[in-house]
Image (tube, rainbow, N blue to C red; front, side):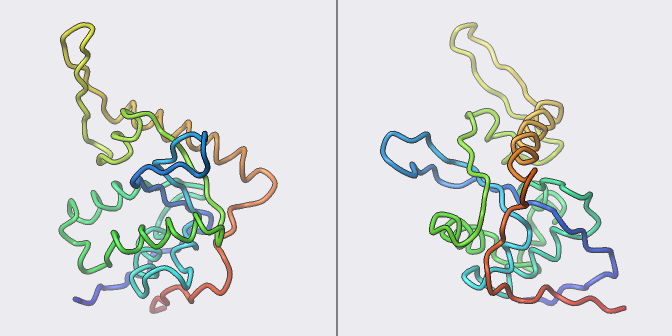
Length: 182
């Protein structure tokens, strides 16, 4: 795997990763879960594929705002449309492991059942558009950055309410984050 250059950017605490995944039902009769938000430090969990989790954590926490929710698609956009993922890590293995950690209760998460359009918007880059066909009117509706921001704002409201008393627990026995040259 190629080495990545570590810049001396400031790491931000309390950043969250949002990723979509195959839907599952946590228990019979429960609502479908198809999207998950975890604390960035969950990427440092020992059950997450390493060192890729630590590399993605490093990328995720650089130059962000406190409390920012960063969709995986935003990282992909920032990584040259995904072309630079190989220099950072295997996001598919990392998110698959994260989902297992969440489902086993080894870290806290905000598990969501997003509607189809909302899920598509967070899976698309920040400047992308999603078109949906409306059978009722026989036409297409385009959803873009404004609607994506609205979805992220709704998720942020849910997360803010959830962490009002206690932030998401990233799990125990975390590996050390990458160190940066001074």
